Structures are given as C-alpha cells and as structure tokens.
Length: 256
Image (cartoon, rainbow, N blue to C red; front, side, top):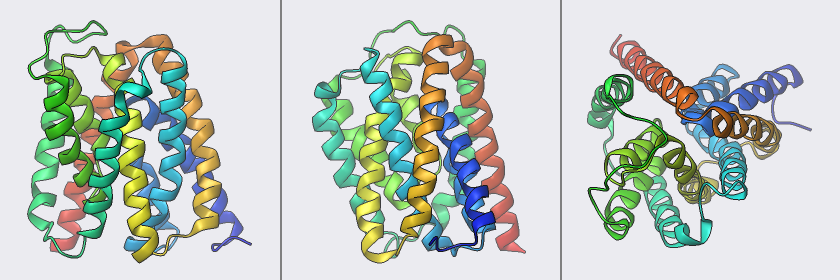
C-alpha cells in the first residue's frame, strides 16, 4: 500500500514522532525528517515535498494546542497566516528559478548566531519585553520574508520566527513559541500546495508520518507549556546548532 518498504515506513514514522515533538517545542523538526526520508532512498526534491505533507500535521496540532491553552489567539493571526501561506507558495514555486547556493553558505552562520543569541543573551524568559516594531510592521515585512524562505528552502524556519518574535515583537519565550506555529503551518501549507503540483510527494507515506507528527506535536506542546523557557531555550539552541552542523557537513560533502 505504501510507496516504500514497510520497514522504511516504520522508521519514518518514528522519525516523524520525534520531529513533531521537537518542532512543537523549538522548531527544527525537518532536521530529523528530511535526512530520514533521503536515507530511505527518496530523491531530494521528493523528500522535500513529502516533508511538507507530514509537516503540516505537526504544525497544525501544535498551533491548536497552544491556542486551546490560551497562549495565542488564532483570530489575531489570520492576516499574518494568509501572508505566510502566499509567501510559502511563492517560495516553493521559485525553487528552480532562484540560485540558492549563496544562501546555503549563509544559513549555518545565521543558525549559529541564533543559537548563540538564545544561549548567551541574559534576561530571556517567558516574560514579555518592549516591542521594537508594531504588529502591523511585523506582519507586513517579517512574516512574508520568513514564509518565502520556508517555501524556498525551509531549514530553520521555526528558529527564524522565534528570533523575530523575541527580538522585534518583544514576546517571551513561550509566547513566541506559541505564535510561530500557525505561521509555520501556513507557510508549510503554501509550500505543500506548490510542491504537490511539481514535486510529486509520497502521499501515503507522508500521511502516515503526519499521524506520528500529530502525536509528537501534542506531547511536545504539552511539555513546552508545562516547563516554558527552561525547556524551550536549550532545545532551540541544540536544534539550531545541530542544523547548522548538518548544513556545513552537506556543503563539505558537495564540495568533495
């Protein structure tokens, strides 16, 4: 029934559960699922497309969990989510049109910078701080930029959104985490729509992984809401640094 051998599907389901849990807390679930899909023999473009299939389930579950617990109001994010959806779709359609190699060299530096910021910046907690830009400015400029990037490449989208909400919107760690999820879901969904037209995702495998993502995201969001910044900060630092390391190793392998 599945497009891949049963043992590979089982491996991918476990990977999706772990990714859903990590993604709900700090982002970076793609660090697990994309390599797992490629390890299973899925070509890179198809792996990215299938990753979008399963990723929307985890992001939607996390967004629902945070909203149900009162940490975010989805109604206030509708406009931003629509922009993220459109930007994610545009980014995915531009995958073959925009040279991304220079950005791949820059990404590890940015992710290491994010890891250092959350590891070393004093005073970061679940308490809000003074915003540097207005919500309208954040929606009009930051959200489309990161949404486009999510469709174009994707790695680190959650970390970039977190950094934006903390540094520019002045949100506390838990509030920032909660507010990233609906936007991440929307840009993921936009990317999925585009990839479905050109990338031919493995739908059955992606849906099976999506079910595991739901379970993982439910567990992860509960842990984040219970523990807050004490859990989110170190996990965000580890996932950002881990993703940077993986991207560096990929660049070295390509150079070889």
